[in-house]
Length: 156
Ligand SMILES: CC(C)(COP(=O)(O)OP(=O)(O)OC[C@H]1O[C@@H](n2cnc3c(N)ncnc32)[C@H](O)[C@@H]1OP(=O)(O)O)[C@@H](O)C(=O)NCCC(=O)NCCS
Image (cartoon, rainbow, N blue to C red):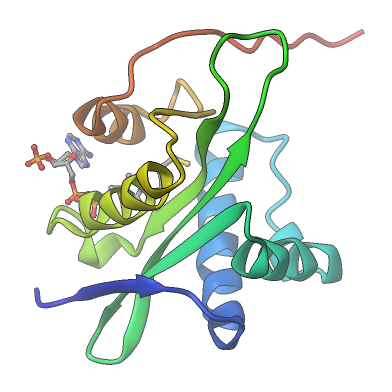
């Protein structure tokens, strides 16, 4: 499959919101019922995504084939003052349409995010992912992520 990766613009917002909705539907249905699949297309979801596209402290790249966006990645700079790492490149969200997977698009999107981080002198990357998402975990390990911390949740 021939494709290219480019930075997103606000004109891509609707396509990204639809892909993000599909990601949330997948997450909610298969891995984490606390994910709200309606959020990406809501007013606040669209506002959040549009901020990610426009903010200097975040990046959004899209994968395009035959003029159609079929994947995206969102990254952001995050900081933890109590840690010695000055800044993290946080992989906020990545999604590639099912029929376009395993063709290198995920890696190309990750590489674009990595380049964006390196330009800012950021060498440490991280993400939060559902442990149950085995395919996602395989992808992340291939990109160089390793398990570091656990997020623990409970119900009162
Ligand atoms: C995770 C995801 C973005 C990967 O996209 P992709 O375009 O299929 O990834 P690539 O084809 O670039 O694969 C990159 C590497 O990861 C590996 N990989 C990707 N998916 C894999 C899977 N399901 N099982 C095993 N390895 C996998 C590939 O073999 C490849 O390794 P290589 O470069 O050493 O050959 C895509 O599967 C997806 O959108 N999944 C649903 C959303 C999701 O889970 N997002 C992440 C958690 S929020």
